[in-house]
Image: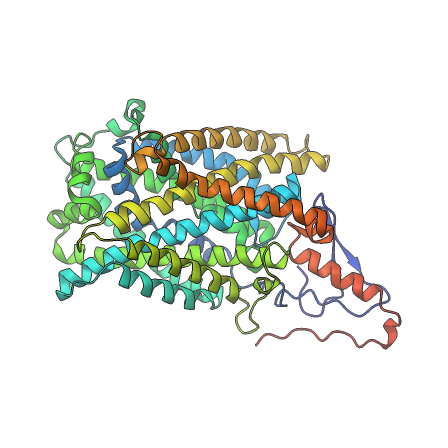
Length: 542
């Protein structure tokens, strides 16, 4: 990857082929990634990237928050089996997605891949879906964060506060950290992740050692446990638990060796999430007994895990678990915030959003304006839920069963749609390049993943009434999924308008920094007297 004052840049065509071409008759073209339209390169390696994407999965938040809420709201006992099934689907998806990551390095990952395979207009639609989906996921997490902080303050300091006060404080702190260097964020996320995993392993072992009345039952892995009206939204919840691994390509421009690091991290993350969450969700059911897990979740709500650990591991461990549950939630908020900021950056760089968003700060190389945009969106949404929350203190309806649950599932719907479309785009990308036969195995995997993901999407949309506890066909059960549909329509229309009015901008969709470097190359080649033009000074790290 060229850096410093390199005098080469990449020639890129719409099919995605790229190769170094020397610059003749013009000034040196610096392709150092720290320039205003590129993220700072070599900031993060395999360990840091793996920790960043796994932090988005927030293991402790998934086990104590997502899993318990799924048992409570959906009543599906077979969560462990769902993680196994979706692990296979995500692995199939990763085969083509990882191969694509070797050819396209763009912070707009999903929409960049879709644009390369299916064209700029579809890519524009995907970009707005990605922005809406990851924003919904990130903003939804503020609900459970505020609820837990408020609970800890009341329990340990006898200071009752409304959930939205710590939620808004979390929004501001996340916004500040989001504007800092990604390698710093990776270190913070990594430390928190390791502690979370260690704590989960400890209570998983305790649950296995002291099971509930049915012992170490494998009932949760029986296909019959997937029956019920909540299957679609349970699948949505489980997909939300996986979300994170597909973010690896978002950081491709900031990794040391994107051709190998990104693919490696994706497969490691999928394997970890599938095995770890299948085991943990099974052992939660074991601790209560499979026949009692839904009732126990309904009785204790988000405190179920703590109610199970206290008699087995003591009050001190449970208090520590509470603390790191909150830090794990915060780690997930920060990880998703970073992803949204980079999508906004990529879209601004390519003309899909205002150009100011496509700039990085010289001090950190981070997309500060993209971070600010997501902070403003979060403030507005959390404030909206706070204003409409007239429930008494301690009632989790607004922060957990609405903001957290609705945001997580709307976001998961968008990610499922993006995954399915990206799988189709992978097939189109390699077939158009004449590599269909050479990539036959990977393309078959991508096709199977697309079919499976579209099936999951259909189940999730039709079961959304269970999520909002409304009658089938109610307006709310269609309005929430419509958020993703509206985002797609806005993006597609925007793409068509760009194609008609600004074809040069439309042609750049999905090319990212490569298009910017080509523009500089063309400008340099058109200079009337290159010999009198001083060479561009190489960018120096601050």
